[in-house]
Image 1 (tube, one colour):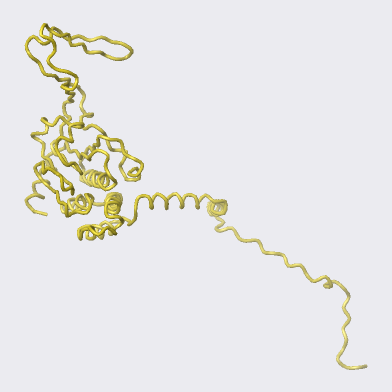
Image 2 (spheres, one colour; image 1 turned 90 degrees about the vertical axis):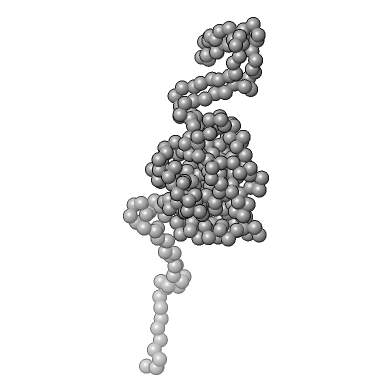
Length: 302
């Protein structure tokens, strides 16, 4: 990765606190794994990044570490809400409000010329809801962020575009976009290692699961050399190869085997300091004539 690009990202991360990671809607395990891997790595750096996604996570990606941190709006941090709409002289006579069933209704009374806007023109903003640095994961065009941000307000935000889709429109200040990446997770992992960010087992496993999903567990013919190189680094940091489904199934089987009656007996005995319960010795019954009188004969005649 170009040194000048890395230095620019490092400088922005060091001097800014409002950092956001935006993941595309309906993300794959690969895309969310990349986003959460980067989120955890920036947290290790001492930052408080916000990770956002316009859609709720599906079951397939629920095993990723940090999935509970995903929000649907970066601006939820702000304290005040600003409602904006187009205005022309004479459009509005007055603005008032009513309280009804625990709701506040803001009433915009039209002037003589009537209102020149409708519902789709209304914009909701919260101060402080715009990041200084924005990493986009798997997002092909800037307009896809409209459900999360006011696009116009991002003009002073440094955007780092991370993707591997051929139809990516190349928006942003820094492009980490290449169709040669077989997964977005390997691109994110490459960025993390290039920035010398700390990588623990949770970060490594999130990224590994993303790569495995995108490459069919490294069986897909288009799996890139970078994927194998990154996988080696991730495994050194504790990641295990395999799909999320396989991992979840293994965890369930381990849990079930632990709670079988025999395993419970072993656990209880061990907790009391007795170790493994010993098997009872089987009693061997003597032959029926064991207690009968015995007559012994000598080997010579008297």
